[in-house]
Length: 464
Image 1 (tube, one colour):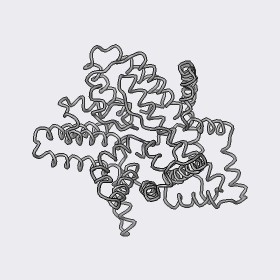
Image 2: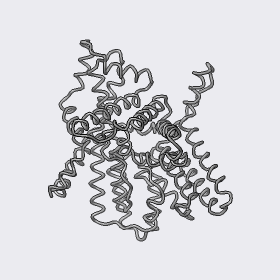
Image 3: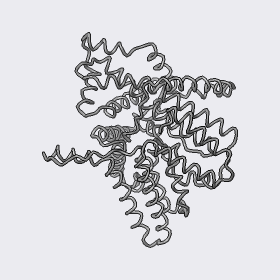
Image 4: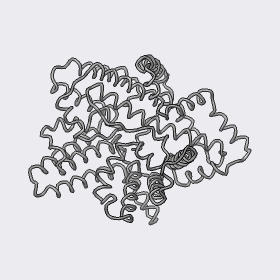
């Protein structure tokens, strides 16, 4: 089940929210949320819900063993990390590894067709962070397995993040309060995220999918740029939209998740971009990989190596494809460039800021071309077409112009504005409450009409 579906909006969410309101006591509310979360996941993954439960149980036992046997806690933590990563490799990367082995050695090893459990990267990283934090003494091990399972399976952040750390919501699992203001803020945030996903991401995503599915030899520069920009907007509004919905849903039930996106497309450097993009994942890798590797404490060469390892792992986390590996290393290279040439990232006057912004957007745009491409050759050909495909092929120009509908132009304009923190201007005007209340009702109606029509509504997180 996904948030942007009529089943979720019209049946699942109203029933669960009403039950949470009327059930007495935090214990009953937690058990209801746990059951609802398992039903939510089982709706689309009836078999793999058992895998998630088993993963949670193994991590629950690991945390208890760390507390019970402090002398062997390092061994327990190491085994736990290996088991968690082993599950990821088995379900997410086995086919890729088999294909790569065949390609390199010319063998014919059978490639297993293993269906990828939705959200496995998210719930596995959450489980790992819980055990590592117990090992570090950051949090106490939870004796109640139901509470650990609720933390890992809680439906708002289960399949698309943000990645939540146990100590951030441990107190709210034990005791939380639903307030009118909190519920209203949560509803508004959820509707904003739903609108991002349904009204903006889906519209530009249809254009991106149409063009990326076409033969690259039949495209020109105009089509290549339209496809690249459309995907750049699609992935941001899809991903940040789901994060907004998750944060809003959490607040509706009395939970407070940390922000996951902070207007990344206003960045003036790639370093700044990663402080604003998918912040829960960036923070996870910094805390549980970069710092343990030594961070920047062991000299410049070691710092460079550590950052490349982190961004290689970032690429691997996103999917089993060479394009994801390249995307991670690509961003790592530009971070290193900014590390050794500080003038690129250092703030300057207005003119320099404009050029820095163009630089950052162009780097991110080209990176997302490879992220979206099915193969490296398609990505290379696409970027080449963007900068050299200035041909007058009537068919190529016709395909490009077919995408430029009035709806696309309106969505593009709205998307560009929504990439900037314009809501801060509305807040300052004193009209924030009235504008958001009316706007939320209109956006909800438009989103539900779009969903009810059964139009294009992909779920891009199956790759993650």
